[in-house]
Image 1 (tube, rainbow over the protein chains, first blue to last red):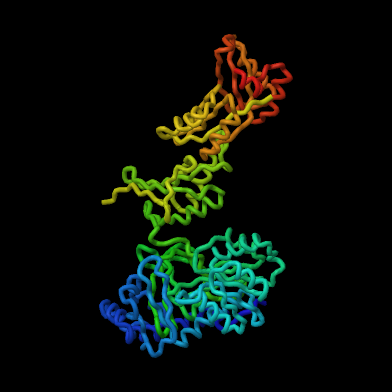
Image 2 (tube, rainbow over the protein chains, first blue to last red; image 1 turned 90 degrees about the vertical axis):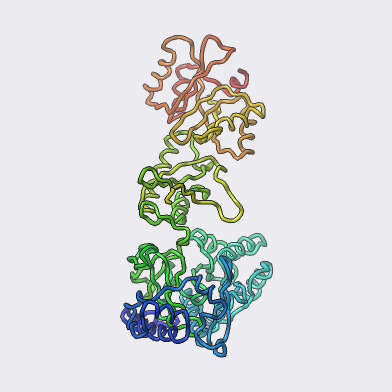
Length: 434
Length: 144
């Protein structure tokens, strides 16, 4: 039976979870209405009083919170408790604009520790284990967040923080770390560095890794598991909501359980803002249920994902979310269908095609057209037309079944798709919709 | 006996073909035969060159996607029925021709050369050899 940190809630019935969420939602709405001017104003504007929110079924009556709202109220405008009750501040990195500041009361920190402890336990980490934290310590939530979870679970934490790879490897070897937490890209790098340094990772005590804070693929997971000789788990979080631990992966490694006693997840159609069905893609929206210092309601993450209520083999009952599949800002609407470049990337990866591609959207008459151009590679180039045409057809078929609309697939010469520093220009939209 | 053929992916857009041809001619590679198979969006340029090693090196260093394949070069007499005979042998042997093209050289005014690729290239070569059809070697190509 899989070890579980707080089985009474992690394996509660759906009815119990709903009751807990409803009770907490009522309280948090009252809390933000009384203490955060932005929420009072927004709710007053649409004529909603805290008393109108009686259960989670009333969630959709509440206004949204955007990233811009958090920037506009920088630094402390969204804080719902006086600073004397705030135990710690963290900040987002500000990579997509102005940074934001978030606060935690001592109780918030305890709750945060609990949800991270659930992740550690689900990954098979025990009290007797040493957890090597290679996330940065500081304003970034990664380092201290994982450390808080290790403390709650009763583990030994090793606060190595980020950088200095040679030292990381020495500590892995000499201190005998049992588990490691860092970004997946750094885990890849550590694996390569270990090999270069002649370290046989199979001989290290290290057996588990917790990786998050950036998108990664199943291919990366396999790569990391092999190079570091560990089992790799995905942890999801965002500064605006808590930090790492908002959702966590169990031994099934098939989606991340959302800590529903602390957060409500909604998957909403980006156009209508109505919930989509299980398995359908939409924008991930979170509501904090227990946060005292920085509670946000219906926060639009702009990330695209899916959820499933299907029973999980581990016995946990929390709903599972997919890895985020892309940003809503990248979404294209073609013939009324939402299309994400990340979906196209997945298909290319599955077919071992070049990652250098371009999407061309045009309009012929009244109909939108979608063309995906992919650079030809040595591995797929054959000297017969029929082989290449067959691949084009297969790509077109797979795109159609993945995207839900027909797409033309075209191979282009190697190196012909423009590359730029930073983000590649993936989409050319020739539709003139003005 | 086989000869090497270079196949290059060429986009169906202005300048794409001449770019590849210029790359080769700039390094002094001479072409013996050229053929293009095309679709709406792309084509495959197939060439037989006098200096295969130099051609490969040029394409590689310019990041051109290519493939070097074995094809069969056949010497044909300039008389009715010579091509039909070759094809008849292959048909009777159960071999399918995937593509073929022909070329002539100034040094051989009495005949032409056929380049062909069969689905089962080895089998095709065996059939032609057994029937004493004269096939070209890499050396022949160089000396033309």
